[in-house]
Length: 107
Length: 135
Image 1: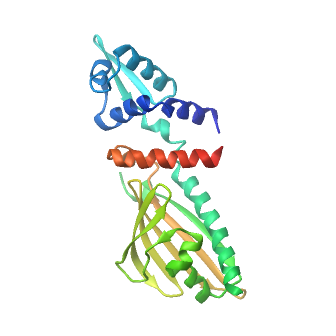
Image 2 (image 1 turned 90 degrees about the horizontal axis):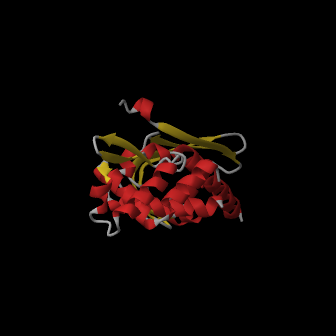
Image 3 (image 1 turned 135 degrees about the horizontal axis):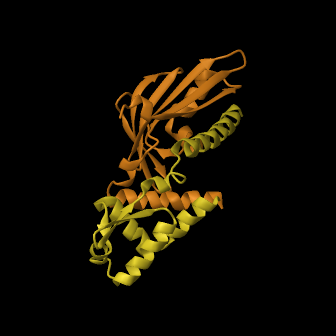
């Protein structure tokens, strides 16, 4: 497990943080105030979660006047969803099983 | 974005000491397919829709082309990602050269991630599976 993956998993380990991150993915950039509506926890708590997400690179912030807008950084997830290396490993393992089966079919 | 430059392909190729007819049975007969791939309701006919059952849900597939003992291709949709799996069998002196090409992955899977909540649940379930395997 790499350090980057470690930070990602830590960032997403908490269900409330996952919920916040998911909302930012689905609904686009939002302020802490808007995010607090509907998660059922206090604004300082939401801010704390955002801080952890930001540290993991999962969320970025942008100041606009007095407001800070938070946005999901989907690129941060790419170490986890490198489909080609995932699938290459998957098929390689399945080929082993297929060869196993072919040898058994002989008998 | 153009489709061609945005997709990636996984290729696995092996020579196996078994005749193509036998290899074909292993990839095209549901009960044999289940033994090394996944539980399925595959049928070797063009247009047939089938599902592969994984621990986190289903992979939706459809037979695109089929040439017994030679090639088999089907679509493969999982977690919002559309791709195509193509099998090719070529006879060799010692048996069969079996080639599997899985193509259509996009490097940037925004679509898959911004999809429905159900997609997210599957995503995290798959993530947990990945974690279990990497630990």
